Image 1 (cartoon, rainbow over the protein chains, first blue to last red):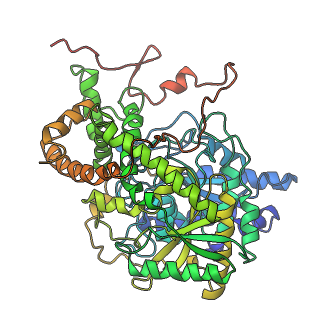
Image 2: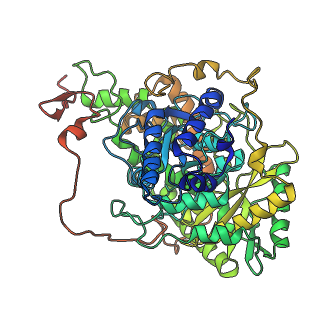
Image 3: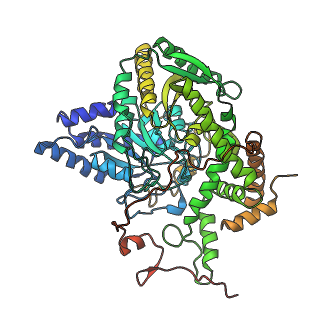
Length: 528
Length: 98
C-alpha cells in the first residue's frame, strides 16, 4: 500500500500545498487502495475516479499558478455518505427506492467540500435511510469491519467509518441521528464527531429525523476531524434550523489539546452508562481511558443523569415519528422507483406497491411505529411522553454541565458484533445506540475517540466525550489530549494496527452474505 | 394480550401505503409489539408539569427577506421522474373508477 494512504489529512494537505506531492498522486493512491480492498470491505456504493482525479488536478493547477490553497484540506480525498445529494453522482441512501437516482442539486456540505478543494472519491454504504446500527440494512449488502471481516462496522455510517479505517480515504462525512457517526467510529477505531445540532447544514441531507439528524466528520485523528468540521460547519440560510453563529474553534482546541494538558478540566463520568449489558472489555478500556485523563490533570467526578435511562425508548418514538412523515415523500411520483404502473392501477395502488418493493424491513417497521405513535388515541401516551423525556434529558445535561466541563462514557456498550447477530432482533440492535442517543435528543456536541482495544476480544473501543451546545471545542480539546497520551503510552496510534486487508482473509465467512455481495448491488450503482 | 394486534398493523400498513404481505404482517405484528412494550417505559417518568420538547435548540420563527432566489429549472425538476408528458410529471390515474 502506498505510504500516502497512511498519512493524516493534515499532513497530506501540507505536502500538497507545499507541492512536495500532487493532489493527483494522493487521489490515485487512494483509488488504488480502494481497488485492492473495497471488493473485501465494501465501503463504497459508488466511485467517481474520473471526477476525483479532475478535482485533484484542479487543485494542483491552482497551486501551480501560485494561488493560495483554497482551504487547509485542499487536495485531500474524502468519502461521502450516500445520504448527501451530489449532482454528479447517484444518491441512494442505501435504499432500492432511490437506486440510481441522480439529484439535480448538491447538498450544502457537498458544495462546501468542493469549494474547499476536498476531493470527493465516491459515496459510502449505509443502513437504509440511516436507520440501523450495523450497515446490514443497506439494500446493497453489508460493509465489513476492517478489524474483523466477520463483524459489522457499526451503523448507519459503516461505509464512511470503514473507508477511513481501511485507508481508502483519510476523511469521510457521516450523519448522526442516534449515534450513526460515533458508534461506527467506536467499533472501527476511528474518530467520529456529531457537532452541535444546527452546526452543519442539513440542506441536501436526505431527512430521516429532522430534529435529530446532524452531519459531521470522520477521520483517523482528532485534528483531522477538526479541520473537516471547520470546512463543513457554519450558518446556511437554506437550512432554517442552521445556527447563525460562528463555528466553535475546534481546530485551535484540537491543537491545544494535543499538547497534552488538561489541568483543571472537570470531567464527569456518567454513572448510568456502565454495568449490566456492557462488555467487560469495553468497561475496562473505558476505565483505563478515564485514569489516563486523570493523569493529564483533569478532575474526574461521577455525575448521575437519571433521565438518560429513558433516552433509548424516547428516541425510538421520536425518530420513527419524524421518519414516518419524512419518508412519505417517497411515493413513486416525481423521482425514484415506481412499481406496478400498468395503466390500470391507481396512483395509490402504485404508491403502495412502490413503497413495499422499495423499502426494507427496518424502514417499514419504523414508518409503521411512528405512524402508530402519532395516531389519535396514542399520541399523548407515546409521542407526547417521549417529548417530555426529551425535556428531562436536556435538564440532566444542563445540571451536569454546571458541575463539569464535559461528560464521558463508553461510546457503545460492546465492540463490533458479528454480521447477522442482531439482524432479526430489532431491540438488541437498538441497544447499540444507548450511550449516544442523549446528545441527539439534547442537541449538544459529542464525539467518539479510539480508546484502545478491548482486552477480551481485541477489537476497538470508543471513548465518548460530550460537551454543551456550541462548545464542540471542549470535546475536541479533551479528545486530542487523550489521543496524544494514548499514542505516547501505546507507542503507535491505534489506526496503525488495522490488519492488512490485502492478504486473503476471506476464508469462510460465517454467514451467507456471498449472494448479496455478488448480487445486484453492482448494477447501476457502483461505477467500477 | 398484545399491545398491538395484527389487524392494527394491517391498518397501519394501509395508512402508510405499504402493500405488505401476509408473512410481513405476522413478522411486523410480533416485532412492533415487542418494541412498543419496551418504549412504553417513557410513561414512567414524564409527569404532567413537564413541558414537551420538539426541538433541542430553541430556534423559532426563522425568516428571510421575501426575494426570489435561484431554484431548479423545469428540466432539472423533471430529471428524476419515472415518466413525463408535456413538461410535467406523468402519474397513474388518481380516481378509482371501479
